Length: 221
Ligand SMILES: *Cc1c(COP(=O)(O)O)cnc(C)c1O
Image (tube, rainbow, N blue to C red):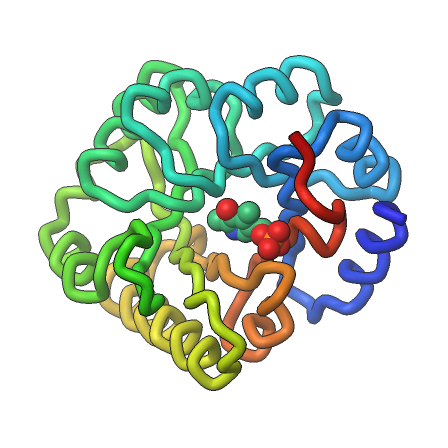
């Protein structure tokens, strides 16, 4: 089942779009089923859980941290994380950079843009993100590298609303690319689309979908 979902989703993706299989709350055995179907990029959103899985599972897995990350936990992930999706403050990026330098790495990161209607979601507003990029502070953060933009759409059945939110993030990405990252080939990722909205995301600029329950079923423990 899990392997079949992985193969079906992967086969349906347009060129240039990657699947991050969101394995949070699912056991190691479930991850290994996806792994055996060829999946290598997995997304987790809790530091302790990720640490445990990182230690016990094959070392060629690419671990993506997709959840809200507290600054005091960055140090645990810094040696091995392949992409931190939800950088939501300049302070967090500065800490990632500091820990990246300690490990001799430039840790790939995405800026999380708040485009949804819900008040409680994390992320930069478009204005805040613009001001941060404009400030140039991030250029000094040598242990972190901004690879693109991440967002989550509103929890709604209104497909037009979701499409509009992804478009807002995509427009921001294109503008940032032109103004601040024109020389940086590594600024190329648009991380949006989950189980219920990834088909919409694929029509609105996504290069990386983060799909969990459609692959693994209901989350366990
Ligand atoms: C859990 C989670 C996902 C996956 O959600 P599904 O609806 O299970 O596909 C994607 N992105 C983030 C940030 C998540 O926390």
